[in-house]
Image 1 (cartoon, rainbow, N blue to C red):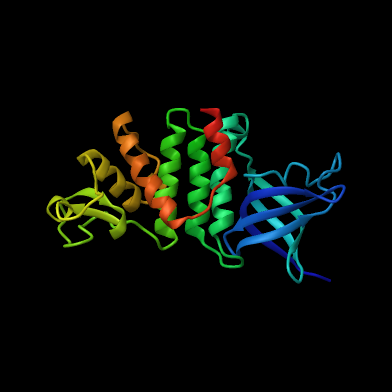
Image 2: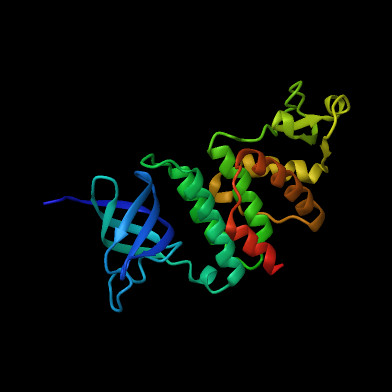
Length: 246
């Protein structure tokens, strides 16, 4: 008899297969990204019908197979219902999950990335936080957790702490003196520099505890667009849908 595994995680994606089944991709604390099949999950009255929806967070009972798992039960602790009621919220949440499904490695657990996704989805449900800001916080912090963090606390050229210019070829910020010798730098306001440093250096539980003005958000978007595209070279359909909504 197969032993059940109890894994904590979030449903990154849920795809219909066959007549009644679903293929789930889960991000778990214990084993990282895994694939699980929920048999009969699309049948009316199935105990997996609600549990197998994207973004659900909880504990999943699984039977381990040769190359995938089979869902045997689930205790969902957070459905993120507020996010699912808003089309933009769904698109942003789908994008965050798509990125992690692309970047995360099968079978290697990472509590930091799972916690980041959970907190990001919680932040999406807060009306006072712009979704655009939530996205950039997620992207910058994720790259740092994935080993591609931006050099933001000292000049990437000379190590001077007075940084003020983003320079992509150096993967970070430069002081004004070093930036003057190079082309294609992107000057930043003091507030934008502080925002980037806060995103990279604050504890996860305080990551979404701030807001910025429109001008700083525009700077943050410009920097993150370039930096993220350099390190994640994939186009995501969820972003294209978001662009069509604006």
